Length: 360
Image (cartoon, rainbow, N blue to C red):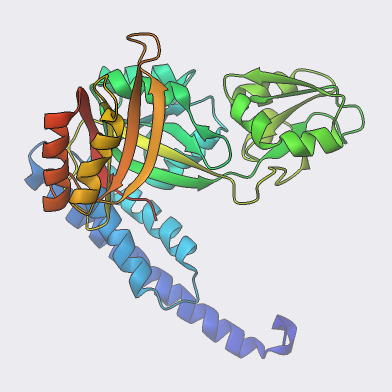
């Protein structure tokens, strides 16, 4: 039955009920914001962003959700409520790999909501610098992609930074082909971040085999360049299209439909336990046979699950490597703390990058 077949009185009655609900929702959200402001006064300068508390709130609401709203909609809705209420306490500034229209901006919005001051940065290095200098409160940087693996520059900078990882975001990445042209027939050049070009390699081989592929520092920069060039195109988030006056010529062109990029949130605070946490660390083994194998022993010994192991050149000597590890649990959990204590005795180098709520 469509709207025309429903008696107008019942439609109006239902709309009146919705209006009443909207009024109550508005009153409740403002009351929530008032309580947030009072909490801010009681904190006495403590961090406004509490990753563990926000993770607990969203997790509880997901579990309480009876529908018909899907879990993703509940997450988006209450992320914005939390963001607006957080802003009543104090405004947050968040740096991300820019310019506007990047997946990094999208990840920052997914984690912090829209009531923050976004600071687009030209490079991943600049995001780290702004956080380390405390010119922004937090930064969001990509760390790995499910198709193309680790983002090496982020790992290299994590090794030396004084900042800590205080959150993570898992963002499904859907690549689009965008251009000033109305169709793909005349495209001679495709700009994108190197990871995006790799994620769409099969599609580009099939549909634009003769087009030159040019790697640039970000997909938003690719959109900017393509917007000024006849027969040029860019890859990236469809959010970039209206920002740069481009037409979306093809959607979801990534070779792997489950393509996901993981981002980490940089900050300075140590994050308490949320109940479902992850710890990231980097370590180096002594230069002797079996040393790396031995370093993995404390995790098994204390029942700690390792979810990621990535090696990178240490840059301190030829053929010397450091190992980035993600484990389940918080560094204050008894089993994790025991494993870390044993590692400190064994490893040539060990740095805990942070414990934080695991992304849903």
